[in-house]
Image (cartoon, each protein chain N blue to C red):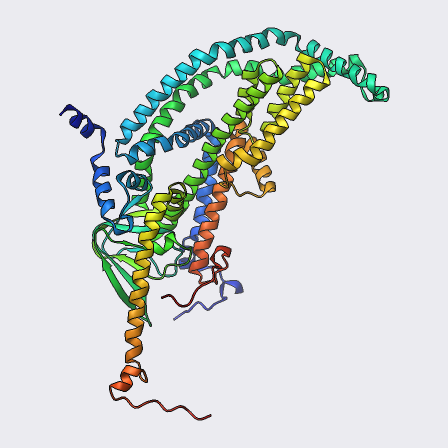
Length: 382
Length: 184
């Protein structure tokens, strides 16, 4: 009988027929599945983005549905009631806030044709203010003509994409219809979807699967709800502060600051930058500009020390370098939404890997090194 | 009469049945219906076929299991063979130590018959008790009572075992010759 001795294959003989038929290890199959899924997600990213936004909205609203469900109210009824309440609230908000916001937008639109001139005038006034006090600073500023050309080119470049928004109107309208539709069904059927997946999971893996699912649910839920609450508080604080300082368009700028805040790192800079630009054009002086800067620095400090720990809390445990890298990769792959989604997505991956490694660690019978487990044990209880 | 119909239409009978069931689980004794409702929405459900493993000894424990239907046996790996510790029926719970620490499971669990279990994951439980001190006190109190019971039972067992060990006071009283101290 011919027996294949260990190492025969390495001695020049090809792999036997049975060896060729051995399926690849599960880890390779999982890797291939992940790569194919990522590719499919990337190719259909517009639909995926709509689903992402819908899922985010569903996460924001799910605590309200769960509260109703805990009182044994039918889920369908709770979701429908919630949607009706939301529509009424939005209509009321539109009735009271939209006329004021529209007035601010139309004023901004009317004056935007002369934006370059007004900005140039403001910069000129500030230059004069500085050079009056510090004549030596004159050498630092470029000639007015050169500055005007550069400013004009910059504004033209920044506003070049605005007409594209009109061409994307159909997509925006479609999103306006599809997002509430997806959100409704995700909210209504999320429990059924989870149950469907649970029923198909092998029982021996259920505990780790439930652990992973709960971790994902908690991280995404806490992050998104925290982000929304954070944005709301920042928006209100910025609008109130700008209104007190007498800066134009406080509602618009507050809304922009709140929305921009959802983008990690870049958001607060963008919100504060636009407010300072408006203050620069309006006051043409350094002092109000400084006040707006102090206002935004104060809001950022308040956000980091008080608001974020209360809203987002410790749901995200990413190394700062990984956090920045994830935001950059997210922006390259999915644009603005990618920047917002990147942080929870990477946190979920990190937590899932940690839980799976922990399970493998236990299965391999390795010694326990978990820091939380170092609790002193009393050897006698009476 | 009309209000009764309206309530029937608005409420989920399955959820109501589960609320009643949870109220009878010893771990949740003393919780109000409102508090049980908060707990109920955190639970997952899973059906197990007879003989299916629920968890294995030595695996990381992440959740508490409540028997909604069927029977479950708990096994402990003895010297070479599995030793059946207990059998649990509807309303019983197991895996409760996972709610306290992150240590590996101290026993294995297997479904004896077609069983439906409710699963409460530790992080969901932690979330619940963080925001609701009354729930925390009640559940932790019940859990402590159960653990105190286990400790007392273990002490009683070890005391019984000690009395029957060769050289123990009871064994000596029963006429056993004392062991000779080996000379050094």
